[in-house]
Length: 475
Ligand code: GLU
Image (cartoon, rainbow, N blue to C red):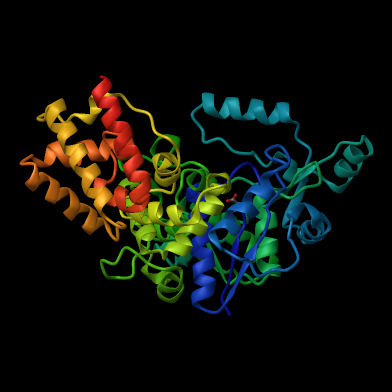
């Protein structure tokens, strides 16, 4: 059975690149009817952020990436387990205690840099005898435990699901630390112990972890355990081709929520960063992703984080929503926005705005004119090529025509009504449609006057047109 895991470190709010890893692990588990495990890798106490776990869970829940382990897994609560396996390596002579001080290690590094040697631990404590160790421990010196890089193999080779055969020399690796002096394991050790104990079949993670893979493979060999398969996801770059950073889109996933992106958009968009289904399809529902995702179709070329594509997908997803679902999205995005608003007007305003929204913010920030009194400078009622007199004539014509109507049944009938005024009064479109639009929205840029008129309804439209006539006559 395929078992994948997302193993974030709670060091802050998860960013989009990291969440892409979660998505790939989730999809790979779901598409194979496997299991998706969430494991909190909180053994680096210096980088630990107390709210980190909450941020991780909140992000996964928002995206609908449910994990399958019922019990929470926090590595900091499993210290005895790592200790046990570290002791096993010690007793088998595959690891050793190192008492080198920070100062010595810094000096060593400085010397190595000066003489142009690659930096790395010089294995000084490998030579310590049992007596040396006992003596140092009696002096209350607390050691770290280092893994002894074996003489053989001289290189490790693995068949990466994404990159194919990868081989890396091991004789240039230093004896790395597996247990720190604070009693916590390092990432390398904790992750291989847990991946083994949790029966992880496939480790899916970012390309930046490739240099760690040889360490992991050597540890698996030393423990006598079978290694899982590895799939290293391609780098994510900005449109400028540079590594993704704050400036080109790499911010917390929840920032996207705050900016009005749908969870399904982020899922769709991030799934496409490195994967495609072999066709040119770009919009996928959650179900389609689960059905079609295939790790073997992940490419190794850097994936481009293209904000324009993200915006396009969000707009398409918004338009594909039933009105009731869109209302729910707006409600969870900005609960206060809906409070006290007339349900029918809300529905109509959403219908008008749905066709042109890119994010949910476009609704909550640009549709107030439907619900609140409007204010504007009377000059903007007059279109560039029109005159105040012609605009007044247009507004009065529409006012009269509206008075003769029972109701406005559709945006089309509102449009017909205005067209009839253009004809009857011998005016141009700019003398009628423009001032009516400003009269109804108070804005120079807004949806069309016929749509707004339909949404506001006859009475409100009449009120606003009367106000506009007054404003223009006074100016
Ligand atoms: N804790 C590591 C991280 O923060 C996990 C790396 C891995 O997936 O092995 O990304």
